[in-house]
Length: 126
Image 1 (cartoon, rainbow, N blue to C red):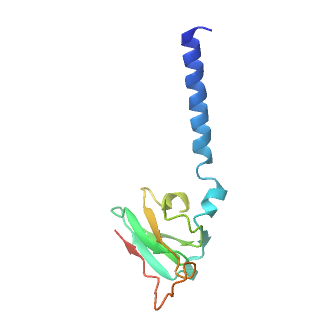
Image 2: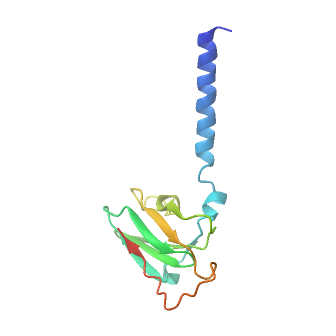
Image 3: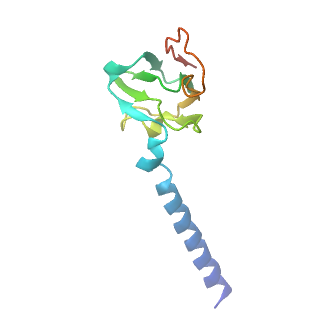
């Protein structure tokens, strides 16, 4: 086989493999590891996301309402204890977030043996 054809074939295979991996990256099973969508009325804290917001701090076990302009959504951070951060764009409803906002998740005190001791669920954003 000609080397040019071999290289072209290998390049096509690499691109096809990379495309397949990207498609699997945020499948519903993976998103379930982050937690679950929740009704905004169930939220225990609220965070306003502005165009300048790059990250938010939340606590595992909390339900947080995110306000983005005139839209809102809520997320229950009841996912895997091995997930410490993820981009909210993967869980926000389509068209709500137009930029990356990383959610940093503090461990759920109930799952780590701690006591919430007055924890109000007050999220912070930056």
